[in-house]
Image (cartoon, rainbow, N blue to C red; front, side, top):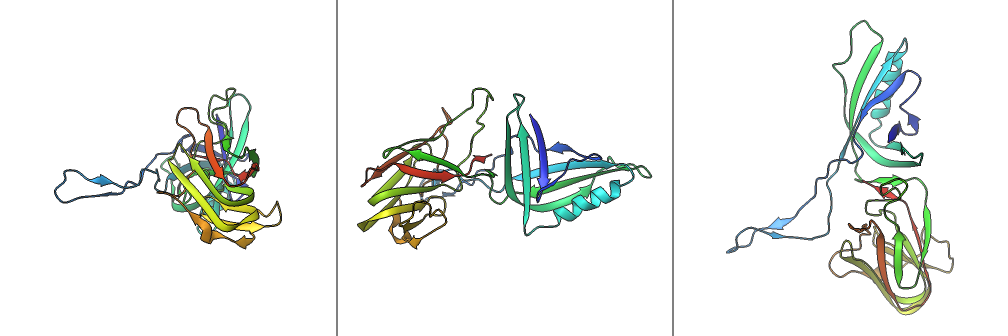
Length: 274
């Protein structure tokens, strides 16, 4: 697996600068577990079973050499200082030649010179640590998929030729679904045990559900993915709001749909990776 990085679209690898160490393919997991002690009971009662993770860290170590090594490192440090609008890009190329690109919002928490530097030599080494507020890497292109009226496989699991979950392996953070001629809808994910519901007094032509943000809107158009007439008041859920997670066994993202209509379900999402 070959990995390269960018900061705000600027490649870190160049003729005289290389990323020599990066966080491994899978970053560390730090689940957020809520529990409460109950009087007269040993141990604790654990809250929601829906998995949520704390902010992970990404470490990138770069080396620059040659007469302009100071300029290259200064440029890297300057990019790291863009704490309010910093985006880290990552491109992975598998041994089989498949390529995928992803990005994540980032905040630089440290950027320090490394002990590998040698005085009076044209070699500069810097290590930067970033926090990723959105936790997961996101694909850079929207993916459109149509499901049957009763739901089905939104994203397939492991790619046999790549030997890994190339298309996605983390919860989808940008999933929007469109339903036609409905007055009620329920979408559930068996992998996470969560669901999202919507209902209204009368049928609407096109209903859009923004799953991660638990928003809804209606429109006469079939391409109103960015919003229409707000209908969020009709949104509800059973225990925890819907999270579209992959199945542990197959890696497939399976969504079950119950709706008052009979039309297919149009979906739009960006791929998501740990």
